[in-house]
Every structure is written in structure tokens, then in C-alpha cells.
Image 1 (cartoon, rainbow, N blue to C red):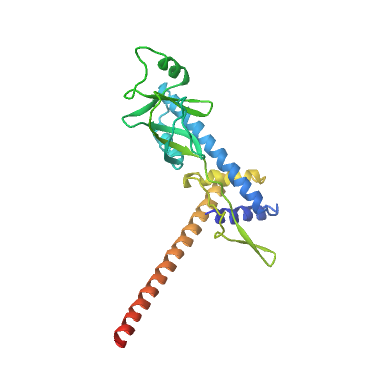
Image 2 (cartoon, rainbow, N blue to C red; image 1 turned 90 degrees about the vertical axis):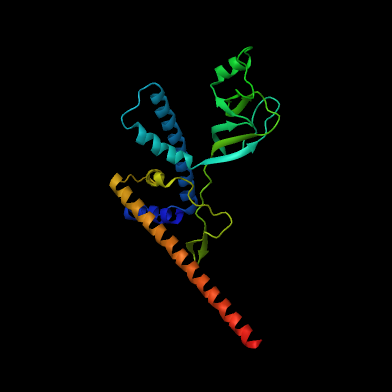
Length: 256
């Protein structure tokens, strides 16, 4: 998919007589845009959830919520994590935001930091294994009570750094996805139009929404065609190998 984005961005720049951007500029623009989109998605989801909790949700709440959940759940991951002696989870390197924390017997309910401190210091309502809690403080996750074993963390990860990789052939830049550091775009397809818009804005181009949708449709069709060709190619190779295997067996029986 990233190659189709690269080609389309360069095409738009060419049509607007703005020259080309280098692969490093393209990669930087794509990753900055993905990070911005992720941040905005989570901010929008929090706002939507808050309005709903205050009974201020619009009539379109269901569609908005479903759309946002689909987009952010693309980055959901699971991990078993250790807990230090102060109750802080040892977070994965790609951790972005929490979703849920589970112990051996129950889920650690999420509370705000003020309630966490109050409950942890409470005599009668002190958290237990059956009534465990967690909170977010300074970008870390703290739990109470502190378990003796690992906890299961469901979290949202950071996007993988996209990288359009290439070779130089007779001074021409040629796309090469087989390099060790190649990485495709790491975002839900629902966000392709926003990503394309953001990358073009960083290039100094502001296209109409209809033009953006046309490009995204074309990008998706080309990517699907490439994938279909790869499947057909694999299928043909498989048939060839099976036929060769049958031929080898036939030769073996003739010799015997």
C-alpha cells in the first residue's frame, strides 16, 4: 500500500508543478501524519465518550463511536507484564495507551488518580484481589493491590514506523519492498483518506475532498490488483511444483 501512496503523492505534486519529494521526506511526512491521526482519534474518542456520559451524545453517536472504535482498535495488542514493588507496570516499548488490565481472578477497574489514592488509603474500601483497581499517572499504569504474579495488559500500541524503501538503478529510484527495514503503512484503511490529505498538506497541497476520495479509490484498486496478481502467481507456481512432483514420481516408477 505504501508504494501506491508514494506514486499518488508524487503524481499530485507533478500535476501541481511542485516537483518531487525525496523518499526520506515522504517517509517523514507519512509517519508524522499517522502519529497526528492517532492522537486525534483518541482525543475524539475521549470527547465522544465524555459527551455520552453526560447525556450529551448526538443522534449520530452510534455511528461515530463505531467508526472511531474500528480505527483505534487496529492498534490493539496484548502482553503479560511484570509489576514493580511500587505497583507500576513494566510497559512494552510500543505502548501508547491502556485498554484494560487483568489479574488472575478479575479485571483491574480503571479509576482516576484521585480515587486511586483515596481507595488505596481507605480502611473499609481498600482494593483487594476481587476488587482491584488501576490508574494512569505520569504516563505509567499503577495498580492496587500489588500482585505477586504478572498481569495481562490489553493496550493500544504506537504505529510502526512506515518506510518506503528503494534501490538506485541507473540513477533512478526504484521501489524495493524486500529490504530488511521496509515497513508498510500501519493504520486502519478507514483512515487512508485522512492520511493522504495530511501528507499532501505537508507537501503544500490542499485537494478537494472529492479528489482525495478518487485517489484513495484508485490506490485501493491498484493495491488489490497487485495482491490478486501475487495470489495468481503463487497458485501457478504451486501447480507447476505439483506437476513436477507427479512427473518425478512417474519417472521413478518407470525406472523401478
